[in-house]
Length: 267
Image (cartoon, rainbow, N blue to C red; front, side, top):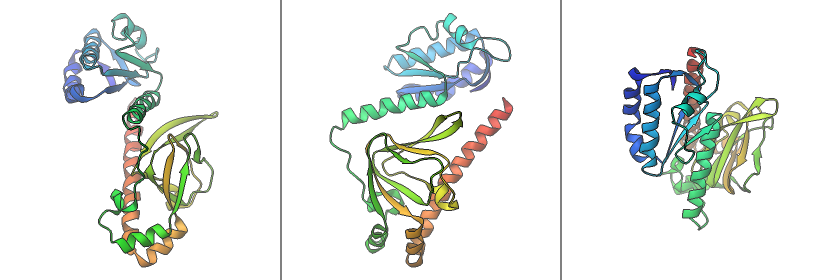
């Protein structure tokens, strides 16, 4: 959210949240670009909190910084109006990434409890990228792939390391961290079963600019650029499909980055 939350905007926000309030287990509202909140908006947040609490769902608020351009301490104001008084129904986080990571940890934990049996590793034909491909084509592709398994917490690659491979996740999950400087990192993405990552370094041949860490024990198909080039000579359509998927993934990331940059400029 951004700008001022007051009586003129609360109904619009409630309308946008209405469907999610009925179904979501967690709702995160990031306050980083909110400049002020009035009493009406505070009551609206309490209503959101209570509606979620009726279903044992949680409201999460991030970036409730104490200093704002108009001088109001948002954290203190929400405490005074009772919005954040019960930690069992609303939780506060310093950064949006912290809130997202906390939710992911809860969801991953629930999946592990609900599925005590080891997650089945996907075969190539089961991955969305390769559905409806001929068996002989997939056989040629698999012959050029490496299979690796990483333990939870193990680094798949680190920033600055050479990058010339695509990682296709057969099972498990991976978290990507970007550097912030001074030894700090920021969690920017999580990939799971059936996803792939590593496309940027694969395309430009430059070292990785982030860290990839296995969140759980994770099994991969790994396609190197060298093997891709060999495959492309015989299976041009498959190579085109892979490059299109990588390009689409990177385009989505760029669109997201453009939106974030525009919002920062407005703020």
